[in-house]
Length: 71
Image (tube, rainbow, N blue to C red):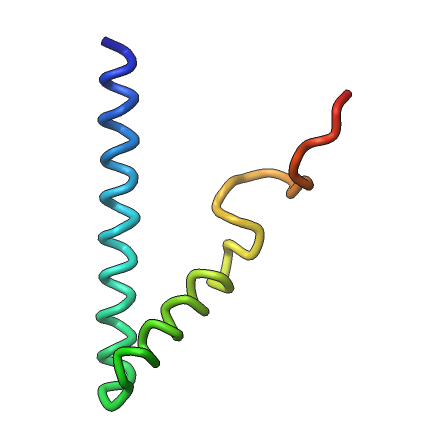
């Protein structure tokens, strides 16, 4: 039962991620109506990598290397 709830939450999170990416893609199209689809995708890729507030990912806390060192 718990595994099903966890799977549903993960599925919802992934759907929200997809929705956010689609919204940003449309936002970029509105900002640059003459841009080609390739230029829009390049801008979207750049935004995904460098978006403000998520320079080290979306998680809270101090960034650490991967794999994590053994203690």
